[in-house]
Length: 308
Image 1 (cartoon, one colour):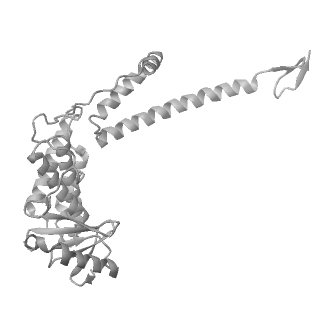
Image 2 (image 1 turned 60 degrees about the vertical axis):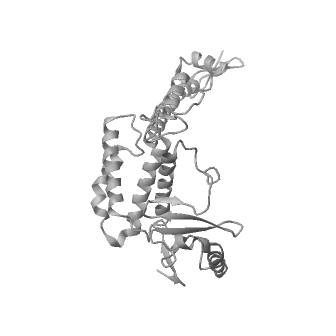
Image 3 (image 1 turned 30 degrees about the horizontal axis):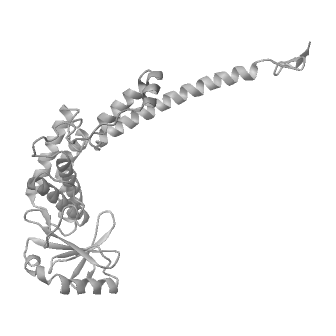
């Protein structure tokens, strides 16, 4: 671990470096080994972040700085007590790229999810409380049971994925592996809460089954050409479309079921290709061994020519 002034150097488990200042509670993935970038960020801290001094010095807050392409700095705040992302200035969710929300509780789910995205990106210095790990274990156990007993579960993970995590949960106690442990815990947490945001968890009309639509989207009508082709092909295109619509509900597809659909189609295409190759081989065999009549002679391959 290298230091640069009060900055401490960390490496993400996947290889990307980042820097954390524990004294001023600052984090950035900018390259502080570059003297120009380092001077820019120190100038930004002394000039632009003075008004947030009371927030930054609070033990439960942390400021994340991001360098834009035009060398301007953007920021967001991390509240480690409430485990949410927040901002000192007023901010519009549309400007931040957030989806539409039904209520404050729905928005808080997204801010909570964003907190775990932060932990996934910067896992080396964060201390995850035991209560969060217990919450994840509970989510995994429920998801495992839900997927095992229902094909329409809205869980983002398969029953086998959940079972494997529960089995290896006791292997995450080594303090020397904190960065790896935090990264995988955060990835699971943000996935579960992304599913809650998408499915309107806690809201009236929440999605309770993966094939349940909660959006007022008009289903496009099939074209006359599609209907004609479907009739010619004994309604097979219509059945395929219905199956795709069941997998792609409100522009959301679940990985396990989508992969299953693709695997079945690939196996079907392999079967059709094998059948086509078989009939083509048989056809070529008969064509190569069939007699030909050319200008009064009957040519029989491999048997010479017989003049008429």
